[in-house]
Length: 349
Image 1 (cartoon, rainbow, N blue to C red):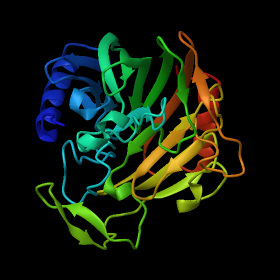
Image 2 (cartoon, rainbow, N blue to C red):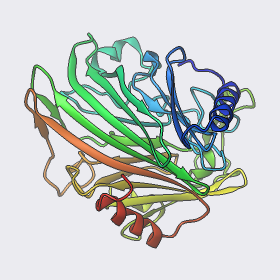
Image 3 (cartoon, rainbow, N blue to C red):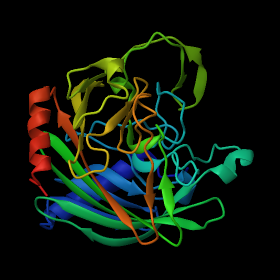
């Protein structure tokens, strides 16, 4: 995976944002940069995130994600590594959407680190085109088309995703509306824990752990395992009141993750829409920094449940709607519950 350095990207976005603001451009800018290749999103002239779609990443993603004050809440490694990050799961990049069992193929774990002998069992989400990129006063939108292909490049699914970006002085919001359509043959999504919408968070938002970890040095290179929780402050809180590691595999309409990144208190929240299959979603939320909503897994999280299996016939579609909130400060469950009610009612978009 190759991108511009974080510093260079930040400078380019900041200059573009300042120029645009001076020219009276809408508050929320969605700016295409085909050469990178990526689409930059700026709010009030400040970089928020970028839609990056280099082929060697094995799927498009939003990377990085920032708070309203500019603090990065996603891990940089392996794309733009920073000091003292976990060096594991190279397929965890920013905010992404894919799945671990699509006609028996694993899209979730694919990366350029996968050995050749496993490549035939992996799938890739390929960016096809930008349908529309629209800036606005209250929201910006990005509409893109992708294909889910097997190891030979044969397309299985067409994906149409619409991102809606918004924010103010204290918050950032992303709506991701994803429609998957089976192409020439039936596509079965099996009961698998590896899915569906995931974020790999910054070190400060991980939960403390006594286990030894591989961290990066000042140059971003992995070092020997060590036991340390310096700067690790995260805690999950589910809509059912469960906290910490107890949230894994539970089902609920929302989940929050609070902690401190650098000197900034941050709350991330992921909201599941009532129209989604599998609502309320199961949470594939791990203390090491993976925060994911899995609408398709069932028995894998609860052995007493029936096995879930969803098959799309050729031409048949399924749609998923999720909202990501990135809030300055500490947000209590009551606020997130209120935000979910707005989302469920269609407010804000």
